[in-house]
Length: 414
Ligand code: RNT
Ligand code: ZN
Image (cartoon, rainbow, N blue to C red):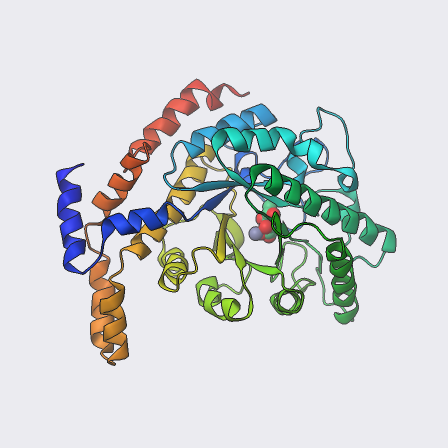
């Protein structure tokens, strides 16, 4: 234990904050690491290029090209993260031994090696159908006007929920299976209702198949627009909010899926008045849904504070969703994920009683003053201690670990 930590701890104790209790609580808040930062959302089907209105930019060397490389990279990233972890995978990351398996024919056997990996790394798993980067996804998926296309994606989503439940069962840890579809229109549609009605019916068909809720939770992710779908997105926020509440599903809030000045931190409290649980895709949109690496910015802190202040730890599932290929991918992954834990820890160190008292007594100057002063508390010493206790590098040292791995491993991938 460092001297700095002792001093910092005393600073927080003065405010009535128990650092050890904060550590204990953080130990039980999982963050789900998205596998797709490692390979630019490529997956292992070796066919279609990334589409669906999302885009990865940059071509930094060292992208994981095989399942083995991706897992090695994930293990490296995990070794740089303190706290509880989960792993979030997409259907296109199936382990099919090089065989082509149609997405509507995928089953849990194609993910058994991921389940083994999760066991070895002590992770819970989360899952996603992949309703993009596929020849049948060029003109809508679950909302397509073509019944055969809709049926294909309905079957894919059903299979994915079964896979999720099997992951949850084998790991004895419920899996969140999140459905996101890219369906939308580049130009102004005449009829916005019909595709939404088709989506509603298709989702009902997907969820009509019962899978054990103990092991699989269903989430649906809304969006404002995508590249090539600028004028209308079928699965909008209103659509999925209504759907999630009426069907008792989790709604997924992605930080990049709203108007640029709209923030998901403000939506959490409202959603949780009407829903038991929600899923977050913590991301950072820069001007658009650009999926930049998550920074420890005001919004990230606000998201974490909302979760902590209202004891939503177990009702908000925290997932990460960003992809940057312009810098070392392992660093990008670790920087964003560490920021998530950091923001949670910072929120856990808020002097709740003091802030609440200022607010309840109407002393808003004191509330603002406290919030501002808290920003310059000796937080770094607490964060470093949390990392050290978890045997991961505190402070900037993780960058050296990434560099070493780059020299030994990723730079050799040609
Ligand atoms: C796309 C959504 C979706 C994807 C991942 C890969 O805008 O955010 O969650 O990023 O499923
Ligand atoms: Zn997302």
